[in-house]
Image: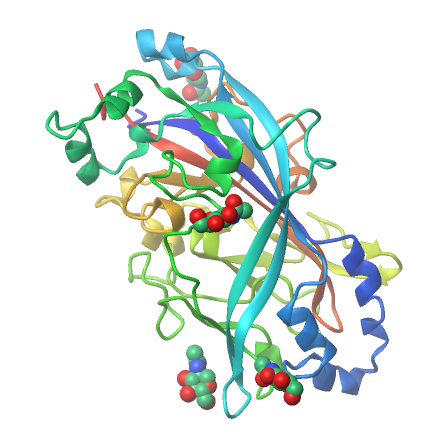
Length: 398
Ligand SMILES: *[C@@H]1O[C@H](CO)[C@@H](O)[C@H](O)[C@H]1NC(C)=O
Ligand SMILES: *[C@@H]1O[C@H](CO)[C@@H](O)[C@H](O)[C@H]1NC(C)=O
Ligand SMILES: *[C@@H]1O[C@H](CO)[C@@H](O)[C@H](O)[C@H]1NC(C)=O
Ligand SMILES: *[C@@H]1O[C@H](CO)[C@@H](O)[C@H](O)[C@H]1NC(C)=O
């Protein structure tokens, strides 16, 4: 039997890394082989360093929300299968990234920095008539509050009128720009892309000077130590920060390489592989690339992922979902779950919702992948896609 009830609220986030980048980077593959190492290493004054300091093209964040269209019905009979969702989106934001306080180590083997990210609403690419000021009816965050907080939250002594009101209904009104960037009630004064309560994190990456195959690999991210985060259980590889930020990989790639990219939003490193039976490589404006895609086992319920489980009993951790209650905006606060979009490749009982993907369920439409120019390791095109949820436990709020 299903111990949990899942309600999909969140965000389908997609990153796009294309457009202007293609022209700008078109010259790179012309570098002759033995010059690549020299050109691609990170050191002051090179073109690679300029790209590293300031991304020449914006990334795009595309958000689609699942709005509850009939909250009254759930409130009456508490039947999740009766809930109807309305997809609202996409809301598209351009993300401009710039690094600062950049400092090379004395030996030039690594470089540390902080990163500034600015967001600008892109009305052209967003759904027709959508505005960041739109107010949406999303699942109330109260239902995802972690159990330790919940008892305090629902204790009559502390309960103020606003909380009482929120417990009365499954849905609550949220303004798009506030949940994404502002300070808002929904995420208890945080937001998905602008956590103003946290100071900017120090990041350290490998310059490739000692070993070009380590180029751009994260050595440190925030409070990580020895390449390990302090997020998941330590029995297993889940805390390992593996790979790069998916904007650049090592040079001289082959189709047999396995790539890794670290995604701070979900405190997880992804494995990407090439397999022409699953996804074909493409050529972008005449430049041949290799396409690597994120395999299903990144989220799968396999022994290697057991360290992601935050329940005492592994059997209570559902397949293909991670709980972010110790990561990012939800840390220490909410049971917020993340998976690939549209419940793929979930077991059937978990996919049994009233939500269905509007497009055919292919990796092109809903997967995560990167198109990389193999000689230089430069990413010419990328899609990163996730779905976030608030976890409801049966009987958590009566
Ligand atoms: C790069 O070199 C310039 C000019 O010498 C200097 O002003 C700048 O601080 C250097 N940047 C780094 C990150 O070392
Ligand atoms: C960066 O390099 C310096 C000098 O070799 C070293 O002391 C430091 O530990 C390195 N930082 C990381 C995060 O590896
Ligand atoms: C991010 O938060 C800071 C501090 O609350 C605020 O000044 C800034 O305008 C916010 N950024 C956006 C894009 O809303
Ligand atoms: C899906 O949900 C419906 C309604 O609750 C139920 O009748 C059906 O058996 C479920 N199917 C699966 C595969 O769990």
